[in-house]
Amino acid sequence: MTAWDQQDAPHQFLTTDDVLGYLRVNARTVYRLIKAGEIPAVRIGRQWRIRRADLDDWIAHQRPAIVGQRPTAIGARMAEPGGNDPCPLPSEGVFRGVA
Image (tube, rainbow, N blue to C red; front, side, top):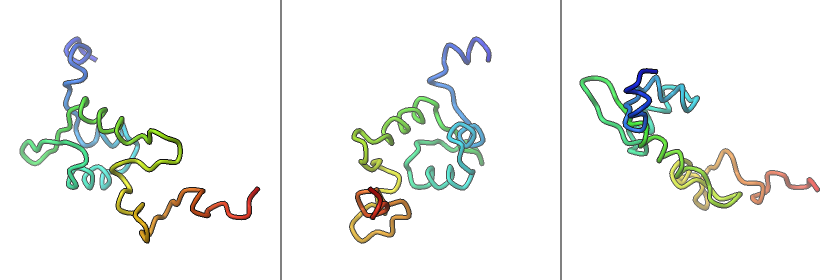
């Protein structure tokens, strides 16, 4: 890491490859989040750039404030009543019959 990177780390721009490595998701997920406007990004030519500070802020807002509470952005549509949630909460009957 250069002196510039250390000094301006929050203002550093990441590539989509950097983001997928940082989040440990596949490229399709990163592009889907960008297209949905969930991750703030800018397009430079044919490539996307994401400011590290924006990504860190987005991550901070994804964590539930209370255990068992759904994140605000990802999965919000599926958490609606009648939604087809592939990962229901335990209170929704996943562990039914387990003491």
